[in-house]
Image 1 (tube, helix red, strand yellow):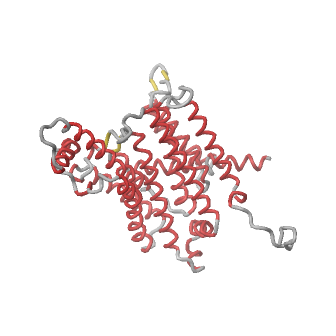
Image 2 (tube, one colour):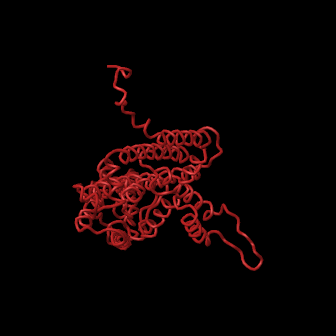
Length: 398
């Protein structure tokens, strides 16, 4: 039966993109941005954008991805998590372990190349352990690094470690029906405990030294950093686009209606017969996994990761980004993360000139956090729906 023969009261079901045109707008803008950066990048096309700038933009896209995940768990489900950056950092540590091990293994094997007697596997492993952990006074490879030699296994850890931690934590918290500010405090306590634990030298992750040299990709050492930066930028853009579509699809259907109901009135949703804890657990775990994947893309571009990256303040910044961009709008989370992270790079990286008042010199490296705080207060007071909410005013004006 054709569409014309259908009864007038039965309309054909629209496609996902037809019902959510903002997703297509976002993908179009992301594609145009990716193409523009690619053409202007030092590694391809016109050498207008430096390699360091391409890396900054790639890292910004990763931060936008975790901001989208944070918006889903907070803006849509009402769970103010102050620990999602911990999952981001765990993903970075998981991939960083393979990067350090494989790179060090190549260095060790090259050093034994002219040895009169070929080294044994044990000697190679001991030499790798000494190279990596000598900085913390150890010459043994911790059990934590048992899979570090295998890229597929470490990629699995990128997903499994944040996912399992979120699953266990969420199951314990949600089954106890901890909500509101108490749940936020618990997530912050989890993040603080994890960061303090990783600061210790005997954790197997080099303590305060963290993992470094992650920008040197094993097997691709002959590839210029300008080209690698562009590859990671493309991967980050693809991950952000895919994550945005998946989350937009998730929150647009019945599942999205339920989690918004949990956000607005959890008791009523529970009274209607929905297993609220199950929905919360799914959202909390899924967003943790996506955060871990974003971290796995971020830190090879940053080149280093240490426990300070997992400190609670990072997760608080994440919540600020989403609030400034406009929570409950996926594109708002992207806008907030992009604007704040790029502004932070500009103000703290020496891009913003100091202001000499005669009696005092404003150094933006020191005053950036004050400016960020004032911006957060201003948005909260005058634009409670965030920067993304401005689109609503423009639509109404038309």
